[in-house]
Amino acid sequence: MSTQIEQQETETEADEETEPEVESPGDRRRAQRDERQAQEQAQREVEEETLDDEDTITLKVFRYDPEVEGKQEPRFDDFRVPFHKGMTILDALIYARDHYDSSLTFRHSCRQAVCGSDALFVNGRQRLGCKTQISELEDPVRIEPLPHQEVVKDLVVDMEHFYDQMEAVEPYFDADETPDDKLEEQRQTRENREKVKMSTRCIWCGACMSSCNIAAGDNEYLGPAAINKAYRFAMDEREGENRKQERLRIIEQEHGVWRCQTQFSCTEVCPKDIPLTEHIQELKREAVKNNLKFW
Amino acid sequence: MSQSYNRGTVEDFGRWREFTAGMWAWIFHKFTGWVLVGYLFTHIAVLSTSVGVDPASAQAGSDLYTSTLSGLESLLIVRFLEVGLLAVAVFHILNGIRLLMVDLGVGLESQDKSFYASLLLTGAIVVASVPTFLGGKLV
Image 1: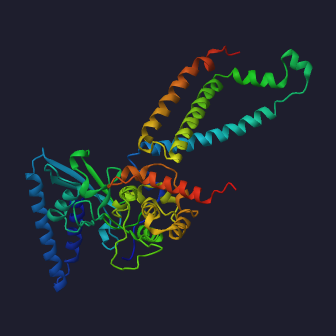
Image 2: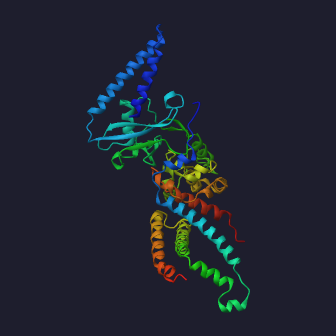
Image 3: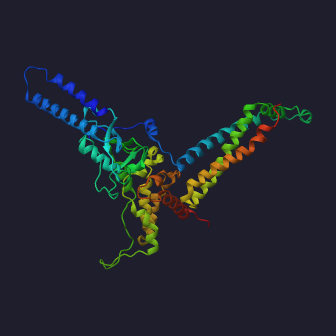
């Protein structure tokens, strides 16, 4: 197992370091640390051996950390994790982190597909860790950070560009006219609510953006999530005509909706089942209708 | 953070394990499109260099045009390439119709099924065409 090899290496390195006769406090601390690591390693081996072969799964997890010497070259670590019914990818990762390697880094928060923190590339596809059942996947489970984003550490990617694109479509309700009475509600018709319903479900996990290979090749492309956000507000009838025109200007620019080549990758991977391609296509038609004049 | 790990294009592509129907449709559409563009130019080049203007030899069936085409048809590889060309053209047409539907917003939920349907139909038409293309005698 790759972690074992790595830890043996650090041990031998540390042995060389402690050779000088005079022992400094640093050396002592390093020796203690090595001892502790060796103990943890032994404990881990015992723990892994006692696991019944029948109900364990193997995780192959992408590891990378530019700040740690042994991890600057990306590699995959194996973790054998006991399986229980209903276990998700996130559960397995949490188990591996808590029992085997506390340096294993990944984002998670709500564990119920609401916060959108743990979109991962699992067995060759973008999935939400907390929503993906391990029983649905083939063993070993290969877990990587989202493609087309820079890796910060282990499974953590830099989401800054994704957030920039989301902000670019001005994702907030902004009506032309607000009611005079500030306490008055701005009501939406049921039909209109139904129309934007699916688009409001976005949790900003970034799976769609990562799956889109147009977005991968064109950093200016708004991407499925941002266009979906634009759809949510452009289709909201309460905002008024002026605001809609402004929104369409953002949507129909060169790197807006027209970059979409209807590969349906985003729609396939969306953990909230938002029909992203459908929304993008509808905005394309909206943009054409807006500009086409026959007289 | 001081650095981050930038995965190169090649590695990105190698990461993909699961292509879905829409992605395959896109790849095939691009590929067949380029093949058709290539064929178009070959077609123009071959025909434009084999136009003869001698009525007498045309009557006799020995002019440049006839001899070029029958020369090509006598090669087995050309017969197979013709079958391939038909396959490429038929798929491009059928998937083009599918994309038109997608652009019109018709049946987006069954886009994967329409892709499989266009593959099957392409296969059927190509198989049916084999006797026509390969049946004639190689002169």
